[in-house]
Length: 516
Image (tube, rainbow, N blue to C red; front, side):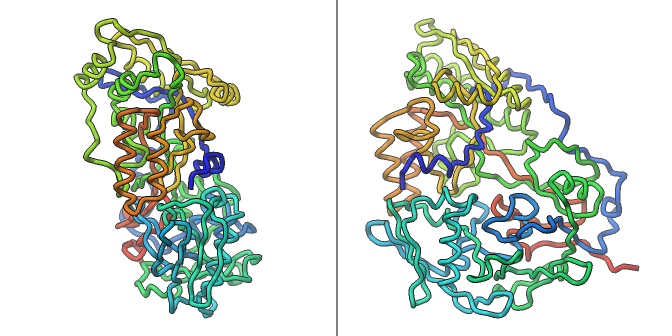
């Protein structure tokens, strides 16, 4: 499944690429330049005083589609996850669990997946879910902006008469099911503002009221914590923030590292890892950086946890490999803790300590991101040691991106959204659209291909990560988190995932009290 050009979009170059090499050693002193993302204030609201809620409300955008394949990210997409369900559900370790798909088989050549659609599942209108509905949703997703890139290697999708969906690929991908958390809607209702789904809630318009009500015929049969969820109109994302701060809605999911709002009140925050990776890009065509020992020394100079705590306020996971530590396939056995001694030893092995090797490196960062500029400066300070000097250069986004495309850099700090199959071929594969550093290795190519065709994907990924640790063609730093905020004491037992804020909703405990 390795078409690097097509994979570029899958990696959704959130490339809010912005600068910092990698080390923020323990000797660095991170300074938080941006205002705090949220403040704790014990003086606000009923929930803060433990009185509970009389109702539970979420935001929605009136007049916008709730089609889960086309709706906007944010409040609308979060709401849609209560109305529609996917073929596979990504759990807290990013492992795909069969959901509306009951089981599946893969052909020997890895090119054909046959999904058996779960029986006895009803849509909210009482009709039965069919393979034709699932196939139609997959075909629509192939052309939808949010899903097209990840599904670009699918050649065809068809429904069989046996309640199955057949997916034919152009190239094998043993991680395909992790990309199939695709919501299913009833075929023929796609043009409705609220298509028909199979989810735990139904969308109701009752005169002037708009709300969700529990779906009594939901196939899962779990007891839901809320019979009714009120919907409050919000014209845009800024309004959603205001509604949450004013306690008009009771849950707000956001990237706190990029949210400019100052949220006040006594809040509970549950973080869940996202697939957005911060990493150090390396120009391996640079004579100094062509040495893998030097690249390993740079990685050893990273106190990743210091960066996460100091600049992301803990809203992220330090990661030495291109997947978050909470992912099932993270190679814990290969991970190494930061220490200055390890940095010094790696520097000595690279010839830095005795003066055999020295040099100056330019670290690019885009100036629009103040916290990344701060991270870059701290990193440069930490790595300026053992005969190495790292200088930060801030550039406007367009100039920054142009410099990367020309290869006019030594180091850059990147941010990219990966797929849950953790494919990094666009970043380090031959001809990869984001392979600005020009990395090429026959062994890297072999291992990337092996991940796509392996019967044991976990073992193949482990071999790839072991290779990447030795070669360091790029240096992962961390994965950002999605933060789910509620007013203190209102909701317990949240288990959000980046793909579904309402994951395991039936475990929630909501503090509701009767209206007086």
